[in-house]
Figure (cartoon, helix red, strand yellow):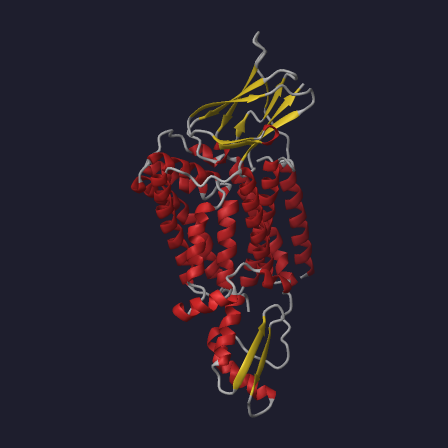
Length: 327
Length: 127
C-alpha cells in the first residue's frame, strides 16, 4: 500500500464482501483488520478476501509479510544519482540560458525559453517535483493515464492562467517571505516523496501529500479511480511553482494585456518544457515494470532528495541566512 | 557483491568530493567599482543573464553606491533580483538598465545580490 487512496480502495472493496461487518486499514503498519461472520479458519478467510482485492494487486495473509529492505540496490543507486546531479550542475555551468539572445518576445522565443527552462535550474524544482510525483504514481502501479493528465493539466493551466494574467494585468507576485515559505514547503514535500521512493522507512508513508480519505472516497464514487483528478490539479498548480523562467514569462503575459496573447505565450512556453518533463514522467512509468525497478526508484529517490535539499539551501540563501551555492 | 560494494563506495565518495571541489571552486571574476567622482557616488555595473557578471566587485567603503543592473534578453532567474541587506526585491526588465541605490557601507562589509531561486549571486565587498 502506498497512500491513502489505496486504503480507501481496500476498505471499500472488502466491506462489499459477504459476511464482513467492519474493516480497518493501517497504512503505516500495512495491516488490515477485518471483523465479520465467516466460516473456516483464518487462512481460508484471508484467501477468500484476497480474491476481492487481487485485481488491484493486493493479497491478504494471516502473518505479517515483512518486506526486506533491499540495501544492495543502493550500490547502484548512490553513484547513479550523484552522477546525475553533477551532470545537471555542469549543464548549468555551461550557461545554457545564454542561448537566448533575442530581446523581442515572440511565440518562437517563448518556445525556446521553455525548452531551455526545462534543462535549467528550474528542472531542480519543477522537474524534481514531476519526477517524485510520477515515480510515486508509477510505483502505485498506475498506468500512463495519471501522467498524461498531469501534462494536459499543466498545458491547460498555463493557457488559462496565462490568459487571466493578461486580462487582469496583475501577476501572481509573491512577497519574498511568501516565496521563501512556498519554496521550503515544496522542498519538504519533495524530500518526503524522495524518502518514500527509497522504500526503506515505512513510517514516512503516512506523511505523504494526498487528499484526505473523505475526499478520496467522494472522488472514487464518481471516477472509480482516486488517481485521476489529482495529477491534473497538480499539473495546473505547476504554474505557481517558483521558477525564474516561468516568472519572467508571466511578467511578459501580464504586459500583453490580452487573454489570447498572454495565454498563448504561456501555453507555448509550457509546450517547450513538455519534451523533457514528459520524458521524466514516462520513463519512470516504463522503469516501474522492469526487473531493475528497485534501483531506479532508489536512484530517483536520492536524486529528488538531493534536489530538495539544494532548493531549500538556495531559498535560505535568498534570505541571506546561508551562503549561496555558486554555480 | 563485496567488490561491487567497494567500487560503488569509492565511486560515490569520489563523485561527492569531486562535485564539491568543482562547484565550490573560486573562479570568481573580480572587478573594481568605478572611481569615485566629485559628487561622491561610485558606480557598480553588473550584467544579469544566466547569472551575474562580474560575480565579485570591490568597492570603496563609506561611499554611497549606484548599482547599475544591465539586462539583455534576460528571461532566467537572474532577472528576479533580491538584495537582502537593503531589503530590495524586484523583477528587472528583460532588456534595459535598472539603477539601485546602496547607502554607504562600512569597510569589511559585503552586500549580496541573489536571484529569487538562489542559484545566481554576486557580492560587493567594501574596503
